[in-house]
Image 1: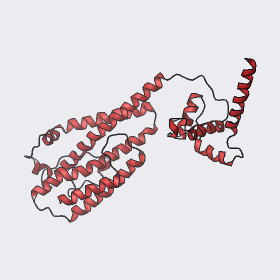
Image 2: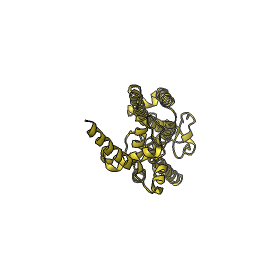
Image 3: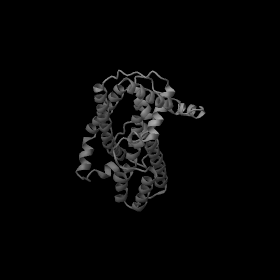
Image 4: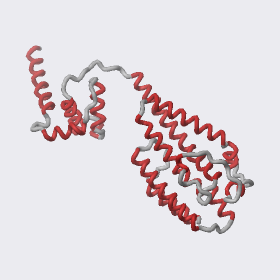
Length: 279
C-alpha cells in the first residue's frame, strides 16, 4: 500500500502544480488544484473499496496518516475557493469575513485540543479506538466539503478531524496573509491624496494613452497589464474606468488608430514653439 499511496500523491502534485506555499492563489490555479485532488480522492476511494489491509498496523497507518493527508488538501482548497469568491465584496465586508473565519478556525483548534496534543506527542495508546473502523469514532461536525468523503472505508471520524486540523492550520496562514494585504490596502487608501486633476477628453483617448504607455515600455519596461495602466490613469485623473479591451476593438476599426497621440504630438510642438516666441 505504501508504494501506491506515494505514487498517488506524486501524481496529484504533478496534476495540481502544487507549490506547497501559503501565498495568495489565483482563481485558475485553485480550481486546477480542486479538480486534481477531487480526482485523486475518487481514485483512492475506488482503491480502498477493493483493498484488504495486510495487518492492523497497516490499517492504523492508513487512517492516521495517509487518508488525512489527501482529505486535508481537499478541505483546504475548498475553503480557499470560498474565500476567493468573497473577494468580490467591499474591503470592509471582506475583512470582517476573514476575521470571522479566523475566529472559527481558532475555536475548532480549541475544541480539538486533546487530539492535537495526542498527535503532537506521538502517542499511540488510543490509536485502535480512534483509527480502526470497528473502534470508537469521534463526532464529525457537518461540513460542505465532507459530502462525498465521509465513509468509514475511506476515512474514520478521527482521521477526518485530523485532516481538518491539517487543512485549517494551513488555511489560517493563508487568512493571515489576506488580512495583512487588506491592512496594507486600507493604509494606502487612507494616506492617498485625492488628485485635483480631471480628465476632460474621451475614454477612447485615455485608452490610446494606456496602450501607448504599455507598448512603449515606459512603465515597468512594458511588464505591466494595460488595464492596470488604464485604471491608474482613471484614478489619477478622476474619471471612470474604461473598458480597455472593448475600446481596443474600436481602435482597430478606426482609420487613424493614434488620433489622440497624434494630437498630443502636434500640441506639444505648437506649445513649445509658442513658449519660445514668448520668451
